[in-house]
Each structure stands twice: as C-alpha cells, then as structure tokens.
Image 1 (cartoon, rainbow, N blue to C red):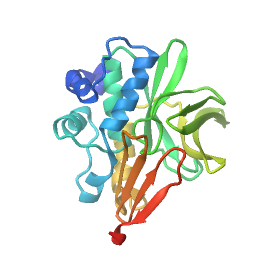
Image 2 (image 1 turned 180 degrees about the vertical axis):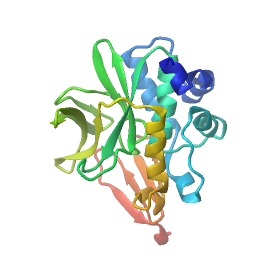
Image 3 (image 1 turned 90 degrees about the vertical axis):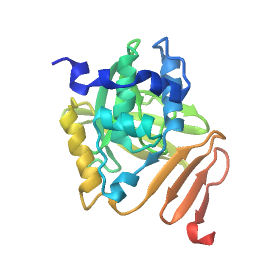
Image 4 (image 1 turned 120 degrees about the vertical axis):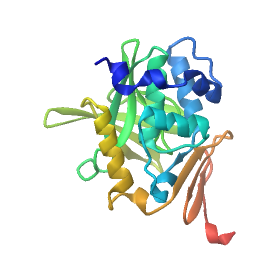
Length: 247
C-alpha cells in the first residue's frame, strides 16, 4: 500500500483548496509552504462545534474536504491536519503526520495532530489546528525560535526513555509557556481516528463541555469565543476579555 493511497490524498479537490486560500502554490519551497500555512489558518476557523452537537466529527479526507471546502466550515486539529497534509503531499512536499500531547505530557493523552514537512534538509513543524498557535512553520531543531506577527515561538528537543519529542513553546507574559509536545512515532489513519474519538467522546475531554471558536483576523489580532467569554489578543496591546452577558 502506497503512502498516498493509505491517506486517500488523491480524493482531495486541490484546486478548490487553493482557490479558497488564494495562494499560487506552483513552487513547493519554504516561502510557498509558509504562505499556504498562514492562508489555511486564516481561512478556516478552529472550533469544536460538531463535538458539542454530538455529530462526530469524521476525520477521513472526504468528510473533512466536504466540511471545509463545500460547506465553508472549520474544525479542530485532526481535521485541519488531515486537510493540510493531503494538500501538501499533492503539491510535492515530503510530509509526515505526527501526534502529540497538549499541556503536561505526563498527564495529557496523545490527542493533538500536527504535520511535519521535510524540505531542503530541514524538518519543519506545521500546526494549523491549535487555535492560537503557529501562523507559519517553525524548524524542528533544538532551541529554534521564530517571531512572526508579534508572537514568538520556540522548539525544545526532549528525550525520555530513548524517545525523542519536540516541545512547542510560546513566549507569554515574560515566560515560555508549553503548548504541546509532539513525538516521532509513525502515524496511521487508525491512530488519527482513535485520537479524534478520545477528543470528541471521552468524558474528560474539555471539548465536550465548552464551546471554543478561534480565528486569526486580518488585522493581526486573534479572537477566541467560548460559551462565556470573548477574548481578543493584539500584538503589542493588552489582551481584552469580555463576558458575553455584558452585551
């Protein structure tokens, strides 16, 4: 079974995806990759609406493509990662799907999906489905930092019991805040299905108890809506948080 067949990437309507992003992707280089990543994050919201409605979501490529491209909706990490990985493979990039743990890796399940891209001898982390995460790729290299659109991220290499993981951190309020830790184990479609099942169905999943809708806005700000609050973050400005009942 070929890698492309395993993930059914041939079924993606690539032109519809590129039209939605408005990116010319004819050259599979780093600059194009970063444009695609940012355009994807800005085009599709991060949300858990389907989980709260009890409707899944399904994370096979056909279902994700229909939801994102035909219905004009968004979703969460497994959906974003599935769509971006398929598009990048179709465009000629060397892609690996990866799973990780959000928060404390000693306690969190392996329930976050990212995409690793091998390009010009470098390993690059694409993370389109974190909500308030990366706008463009960052190198998977110990100590690598990237400042973009007013936010600084860092990658730290972690070795535990002989297994290598990569911790993504964000500089926040004078300290490095862990976002997630991604391992290097091979990922199959069944692994994505299992992670998605945990996030959408397990009683301990926070996505089952609260609404989260997040979007990077064109003015550089980032907005997050929950069932209780609206939070807007702007680079160089104080975060504004408002309770919904305030009107």
